[in-house]
Image (cartoon, rainbow, N blue to C red):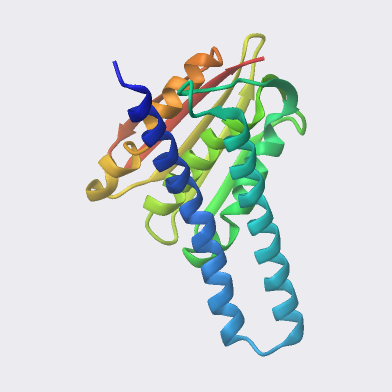
Length: 207
């Protein structure tokens, strides 16, 4: 059984891990800004930087507000929201990194609105973690595929990407224990499979 101190340390490290790639996106945008002279390009990049930075700040503020360091556990706040909005927001947070690596991101879903009743900020953390790892550990010019489906009981999301054997352990490691515990508290579950150079994460969220 992990102590409160160990849980708190894991929580903080996981946040730092999750926001590293969005911050890298900002770094890439700033570097591009230095190399581009056109005013229109500069304005577009500045807009992207502002939006990604605002997203990061909101993410951190909401997590820290809902997390009790003294009690050593996350305070769950359920609400009704569209899971596709969350996925698209986290894709946007990684947009510049996706472009830099020439990753093809493919979101497959038959509906425009798929609502669930859960903790929005914790679900946001789950998908930021999964998509960060998928983009970070995929080789350049590969595809990250996100498939979303719904039945009477669950919304099922599958995130699939190519991963080199040298990165397979890393892509399934950091943060997954915390995320698995969080999803258990939300009556949800996560699992993964690996077939040759493809790794798939499956998340089931109750409707």
